[in-house]
Image 1 (cartoon, rainbow, N blue to C red):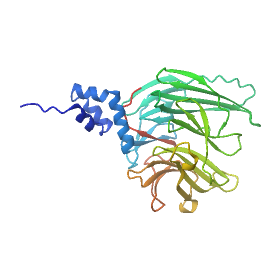
Image 2 (cartoon, one colour):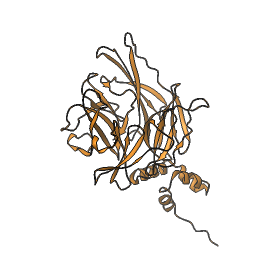
Image 3 (cartoon, one colour):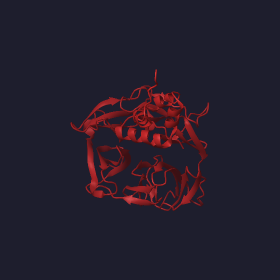
Image 4 (tube, rainbow, N blue to C red):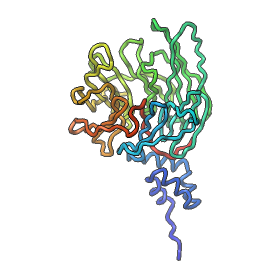
Length: 364
């Protein structure tokens, strides 16, 4: 009996719609299928389809012990611990520096960094860049990171920003370095002379740029700074025109847009949250394109809340998944404007942060 030969284009059209685990198994079908699935162009096609269709998505929370977890995004079921390349028998800790195209940037307590694809289990390890700031009398400092893909140069980059300051005035020293996966080395670039507001929050990737909440002086109003992965330059983004006063800011990527969470608070404490607004920038870099997507009042929550971040749209884009108070998730219905389906992750009472991850075949 003659063997039916399926055209290469038809095979590619079918396979790029499947999950990564299925594709890795199907490499055993034939040499032709193995060659196709290993092709970087096929990996890009598969990734593009997953991002457009909103499939193969998961959340990556980090437990209080520093362990890296995974849970399916839309169902919020099947929580599992990921065995990452930096963990040892005695130490499961890894700081998640960022997520991009199915890759996670991780950092150990020993300042080892890994760019890791949890789906293919392939990784690259390298040391963090040495901080060369002459500290003098500067007593306090920290380092934040940001991870992303530059479409122009077809290169994955890791940003490292170190900042030291006096405890009693507004003097700062900063140092900025960029790691390029294509050259496998660190380079120092222009310094950044704004205060980074959050010492434990890494850069948010959206529109080929990494975003940070900053201020001109330590106690002045918050601003949003963007680091362009192509030009490797910083700039400030204009905030929505009609914001009130007495608020804190957080940035996040939401459905391909840059989103802004504005928390208005009472009194002097930022945890006395009264109302929260979530905005999205429909046309990147255009101030007038900021659109208020969600407005939540404290009274809408039975037990109240202190912290809200948007994570993702539902499959039909009619709901937004919210990350609330670092230990639970809620779906916000955009039509009824109500919060529903509060969920806590089974066996995980509290965690330190969460990233979204798309399963991919991307290799470094």
